[in-house]
Amino acid sequence: MTETRELRLGVNIDHVATIRNARGGRHPDPMRAARLAEQAGANGITAHLREDRRHISDDDIARLVNEITLPLNLEMAATDEMLEIALRHQPHAVCLVPEKRREVTTEGGLDVVAGTAELKPFIQRLTEAGIRVSLFIDPALGQLERARELGTPVVELHTGAYCDAFHGFPESPTRYLHEVERIATAARHADALGLECHAGHGLGFETVGPIAAIPTIVELNIGHFLIGEAIFSGLGETIRRMRALMNEARKVPEDRILPSLR
Image (tube, rainbow, N blue to C red; front, side):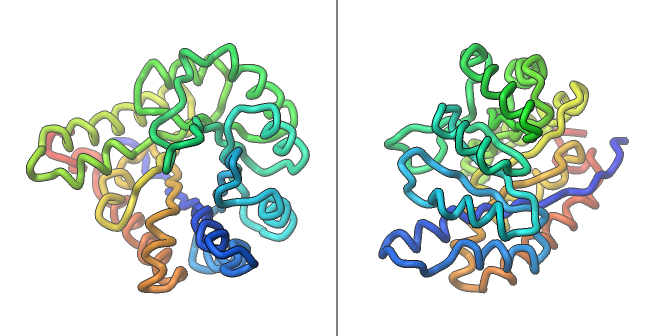
């Protein structure tokens, strides 16, 4: 039986900035969201500074670094501009993610195998600066092994395909079972390789349980759902409910996550 570990919650505040930017001005303020998240039990704050600045801005990152007490996880593409920003602000962690100008949201994980030559100098520079580096990847064993070879201490598994499959259940139960098994297998393999395993993308109240129950996943990063649900229930209450669902799922024995995983 795998040892039960603490499961952390990182709250992504990008879409507070999306709402602010729809009209300009200062409201709603992502900093206020970060403070409310801390009060509600979040363990960290995540923010993605995109090249097109469609939500989080450079000023937001400067304020987050200077004003919040929780660790900041800066999501960014592996570009020279973003590297310079990260080295200047020194966040607790940087998660390297793929980025396309026309995508609505991050569509998949980094191809670490194909991108090894490009990623290696970024990982090295960030690591030398004392910044913890994570790679946002699909739950594929080859990607995990290459991440380990590159010396990154953390991987974050993309859960988008799992969430899509969840909403197709029970019409496509085989696909749903496959996606949960895929993430659980990848998380176990990451742990065996000595990698700290995180997960995120698209998780909500309905979908968080099976992922939170995987004992070798130690952090979930959740944003869009929390900000959207906060319209109806308030941000603090939404985060507290998510935290409670995560805690409850963590009590589930590994062999009962799904019957197919026994």
